[in-house]
Image (cartoon, rainbow, N blue to C red; front, side, top):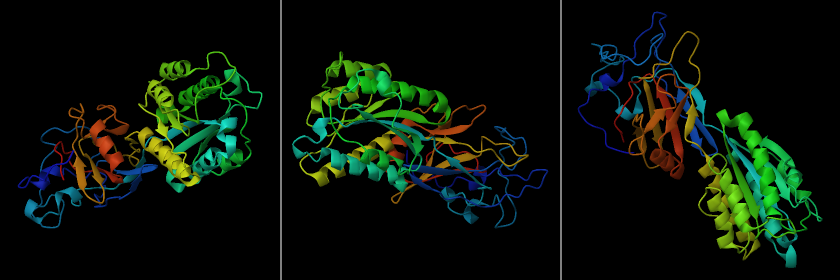
Length: 385
């Protein structure tokens, strides 16, 4: 998604900012907003041309000025092209699509059997995640299984979470975790079935503004007196909704093959297996697994705020820049996402969101930094670095 600036190209051709009949001032401001993968902000601004849409060739003129220091100045007088300083107009914040994680947490007796530190360590790591400021932008719910020592085998015992969907960070989860006493068997199938029902309800109500996923935390095989509680049955259940509701698996046990099968059924390839050799290692690995799931679940999908009253978005004057400690890249506008790099609109005719193509999305997740969505400069369809 990165390429060198092409020298010799007139930066003035990238401007196209013209004064509206309302004398809307084209201010040279760029809003730099932090992109952590739990909090994604961008910048957006309207066209300075009232009622504009994709312009014609005449509308996209160089807009050159005879005086240095004004918009449209010649290339030898202009600031570096990747800064967009000479054409960026007023900006407004845009936010990434939020994430809704439905946690299904194993509190069976095996989590503490023989003095095992699995429960204590997993609980501490979970608290750290739920209360961390880096989890902003994530919502979570929490369901425990089994529901009691003499556990229930019906999914209706698990379709109402102990902690309902809550915006993070929050200390509500810590209170609930501290109140649990691990005991009983592992009715995984019933618990997952209940969690899916709840997740589907969340998706129905929030589908347009978020992504919903299930996180199954368990220390081993589905073991109970419930019918149909097998690895194969759990895998099949996860697979039945994987396209809409992926299931991530965090394993704090040694059943690597079985847990990976369930994750594969849930559309997430493999389970996150936590090392159980020492309490500190369990906590460290568990927290790393949750954070990896958070990153994986994020969509590189950003809402475009409404422009100021009386202005309309000019779709030909939008640019997306990703900056990290090592690089600054202007992503190419790529409406078909051919090759996987660049960005596109959710709807090229009436856009409401900006979406990164798959390869660019993966790169942005792998190298967090700042994402800038700038409006007012002619859209570039060539990658700039």
